Length: 372
Image (cartoon, rainbow, N blue to C red; front, side):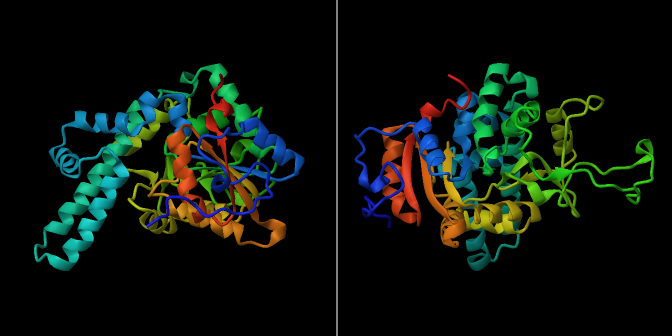
């Protein structure tokens, strides 16, 4: 059981740990955090959670919006699941199904029970994918120009400063912003590229050269943008992880993704219940494993936005603690967690002792990720 308050610790990282701050004391701004890290010449890394997407449009990217969409599908199996478990949190439903499946293996003689549970789990994942795809803005230019530019400016702080960007979001908002503003943030690299498939001879005329679809692997050396739980445009071909892209002839990106899903090709997508289940799924995919390992080796400081470190995020805390345990010359020293409310702040105070680095908080609203 977690203690209600973390133990106090001595802090030399600026503005005080969560343990040393009372919930009614003033909280620092995002600009103050950046100024302090710049003064210390400390590398800043970024971790994005669902709050990043909700800050753009909560009517699309909240769990309530997703579950309401699933309700409209009129799938009796899923309706019964949500009714029994009495929650609209997909992760909690997935966890319950996983636990029930393990119990069925041990205590049930019904050979059909486990397949039914697995089928329910698959149906839930498929419905979640459908919901995200259908609720998502239609195309990259559906994001207003001022919001796109503001977000690009926010992101450039990290890639321009030799930091890394990590996200647990499945949607393509981050991908769209990086693609649309590639000239403003040319240093953002997601590790995908085209491999030569014609032998690779330098003497082959340019027009005769053959390239693969966007593929992850050979271009991962400079990667600094990491989708920890996968994303809608990423698909596992069995031999490689590929990225669907916008094509003027084929139609927009989201249409291409929907077509793949309709063909029962599903994106690389981690939707398991608790942190242990998520980590097991991550370790079964080469791309996700690489991204997670990169989080385990960051240095400097980590700033989080829209990430609440809930009960299903223990694997993320484990990665942060691994980064903290590195050699002093290349370790993670501190984390700055963006909070939106007093309740949010109290939650971080209550779990601060789970982190092995210094914990600070800032007012997430002052980051103005999508503009004022």
